[in-house]
Image (tube, rainbow, N blue to C red; front, side, top):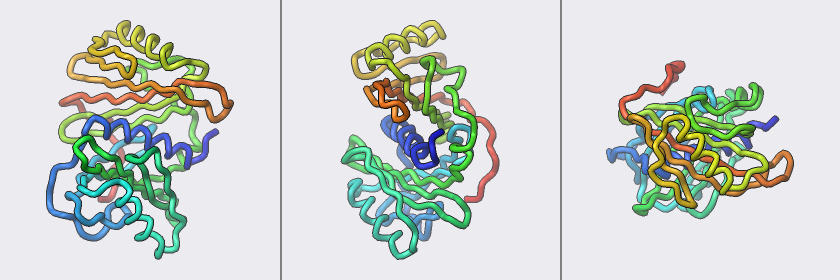
Length: 253
């Protein structure tokens, strides 16, 4: 059973998939004080609410943008959190994507900011606060039934929220024993059978449409951390204009 930190890392991957579609906050004056238990970043837009569910667990989320590069953002938070006496959590997915934050031992809440470089040179900041224990202690998650997915999916993490009048969903999982090519072919066939129209089916990604929903799927080679065997890593982003996300518990701003 995965622990809370690997599970949170997969949740960050899901957020990276969302950011890849250019989900950016509206520009506004810089926000003073703190954002979800983290210092507000100087030289940024106002952090806009974008609360969501991560594998069914409520997660407070705020989104902002800055002109600073990812490395500058990460260094700022590393230095800002050090005097607080907390153990700083930090992980880089690459030169243009990383997160940094800490766990509040008093409340068990994990406070993270993910910094994701955008194509226009800006950096998207995704602030989040949640109790990760239900992710580690609950039953293994399964992909949502209304999305095209491969059988035997493991390490499943999904998010579901509403932002700017559009429902945003992400899904990330591993398919053990499958190659990326085989996974893409199987996903395309399943999507067509479920009524999705395949817009693009090149070697890098699949783009699907069904009604008001659009779906982008990225597949790459990975190793199953539990068995060490090859696996296909599937990341999916679904946007649906005018659709509402499921109701969730109210959280404090």
